[in-house]
Amino acid sequence: MDFRFTEEQIMLREMVRDFAQNELKPLARQIDEQEEIPDEIIKKIAELGLLGAAFPPEYGGSGFGELGYCIIQEEIGRVCSSTATFIGAHQSIGTNALFIGGSEELKQKYMPALTSGEKIAAFALTEQGAGSDAFNLKTKAELVGDEWIINGEKMWITNAPIADIFSVFARTNRGISAFIVEKNFPGVSTGAPEKKLGIRGSKTSTVTFENVRVPKENLIGAEGKGFLIAMKTLDAGRLGLGAACLGACKELLEMSVAYAKTRKQFNEPIANFQAVQFMIAEMATQIYTTESLVYRTAYKYDKKEMLSRDSAIVKLVSSEALDRCVDLAMQIHGGMGYSRELPIERYYRDSRINRIFEGTSEIQKLVIAHDILKRNGKM
Amino acid sequence: MNVLICISRVPDTATKIVVGSDGKTIDNQGVKFIINPYDEYAIEEGLRIKEKFGGSVTAVTVGSEQSSDILRTALAMGVEKATIIKAPEIFDSYFVAYNLAEYAKSIKPDIILLGRQSVDFDSFQIPSLLAGLIDYNLVTVVSKLTIDANKIICERDVEGGKEIVETNLPCIISAQKGLNEPRYPKLPDIMKAKSKPIEILEAKPTDLKMEVISMEIPMKQRIGKILSDSDEDINELVRLLHEEAKVI
Ligand SMILES: Cc1cc2nc3c(=O)[nH]c(=O)nc-3n(C[C@H](O)[C@H](O)[C@H](O)COP(=O)(O)OP(=O)(O)OC[C@H]3O[C@@H](n4cnc5c(N)ncnc54)[C@H](O)[C@@H]3O)c2cc1C
Ligand SMILES: Cc1cc2nc3c(=O)[nH]c(=O)nc-3n(C[C@H](O)[C@H](O)[C@H](O)COP(=O)(O)OP(=O)(O)OC[C@H]3O[C@@H](n4cnc5c(N)ncnc54)[C@H](O)[C@@H]3O)c2cc1C
Image 1 (cartoon, rainbow over the protein chains, first blue to last red):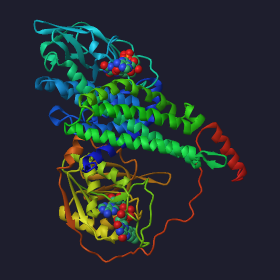
Image 2: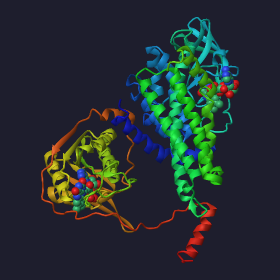
Image 3: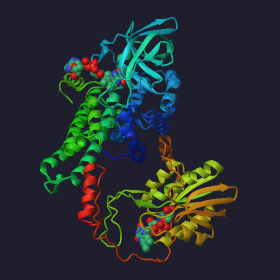
Image 4: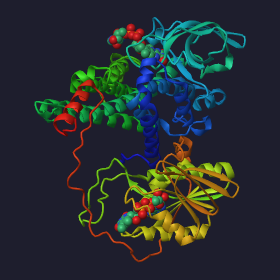
């Protein structure tokens, strides 16, 4: 057993950290206030190779695997959750559905432009009546001659307003199937960006398909395998989401400690009070737990040994850990934490979504419990 | 145009320095080392010269075999080949300059780029010593470099203005902040760095021209206060200036 990162992984982290701290952190407040990630920063992220990091070089990626991807998301998640969400929806679910399920030809056709960031991806599963119960989706795809005709509406689709390529899940004769749909196919339209509590820079909207004609070969994998592809894709998405939560927790702890050591009350730094120390201890404990889970699970993912249950556990623990840490960070900062002058309130708003999207905490528990019951309690 | 870049491996500027038990060296335990920040400008400039004029970029450091960590980063930025000249535990600036000179003689670069200073010992000596030892032209603390055929035009920051210096090849340039914006290594290049060669050479010994007798951390830290730009802190600043510093 060897828990050390490789030389390349360390270099990756250092590069992404420098980039995130120097280029992204100064923009994080603007991204939140203007509800938009500037194109120039997306371009820089793409040029560094961050949008295809996980994928093999054959598809234009740089072969860092899920573990490298988690390192990236941890460092990005430290400074800007909107950007981490953008990267996650593009890479870990939008593009990953194609990588996991697509034929060689389809991957060769679409992946290079996605891994280079020339085109942006989104993952379109959720519908009005199909949130936690994603299987209940109603969007239809019908094979007519050499084309699929898709009709229906997706909602809550991250990146939809800026995406060029959608992984779309729709009902066909043989169950749920997955498709690659280009935004510029006639009949595809996206709604106005939702107004949200947090991750405001990440744009989310509806996507409507009105008699959209999609080439037959844009079916991802076999017909009827779409739901399986969606679930496998979310297994990866949940893990990366955990990594982004981890980064935010670490940043919050560092900010909290710096504040607790300088803020004086009763003639003492508040860090001297045991009640504050307990909060710091709890944050550190949450971080150590989350960090251990994220990288152990990423390692298993790259060895193709990860169970769906594992990443559900990561997602459950890390999203709850971040909510706890952000709450404690605000408590340590007192009134200043509540003020918009400091970034704590932004982290507070950004954090909450992690217990909801990519499957709510309750749904993670269902995934975990179903698996454990199936195995008669054997881990 | 063949470029040689000399890189110094220094403790991360955020590191808390602890003096070793011998009272003469820094305790390296748990210290993170990085590329000397000024040398990043040298690397970037070297890469730009190669991209414009062709040729090759080699990096060299005098130090321990552990220096491979910083050299890998240089390789990921785009340097093609890197060399470690293995030094004993105790050495001085002359030793470094002498060994850099010997190496430079063996590969005959057109231009040698260094940082203006190494932020560990800050002696500012290496570029000058090196120029003396190999008889290349030298321009130090350069904040803008233009190469036009054999003509090298350098801008130097001087008190209250700029100085423009012209020289020709072969030459040694030491880099000042502002020379350029060092690039971040791209992901595919980080992967490729692994397969690029790092050569390890034995250093040639020199007599110590300087010896560290003792080293200590300044006892009294300056008692600075850092205040934010909040209204509360601005009031505090006025109070401190008035009551403690008694300047207003
Ligand atoms: C900002 C944002 C971005 C999103 N991005 C995407 C995206 O890119 N792609 C995409 O496809 N989707 C996306 N979603 C959708 C997201 O995955 C869903 O919102 C989420 O799965 C929950 O579905 P719902 O909102 O319909 O809630 P519901 O399913 O209506 O759940 C409401 C409550 O009921 C609980 N509940 C439901 N079923 C059960 C059960 N069986 N047992 C116990 N409790 C249950 C839930 O846990 C929750 O507390 C996004 C959502 C948001 C808000
Ligand atoms: C009196 C004295 C004693 C020392 N004793 C020791 C010791 O016992 N052990 C020890 O580890 N270090 C020791 N050092 C430090 C050692 O000499 C290194 O050279 C030091 O890291 C940087 O040297 P400098 O301050 O002279 O560089 P500067 O002249 O300030 O550096 C200018 C530029 O020269 C180049 N450069 C500097 N150092 C190197 C290098 N090593 N390899 C390649 N290029 C370089 C870089 O481009 C740098 O930006 C000692 C230094 C002094 C002054």
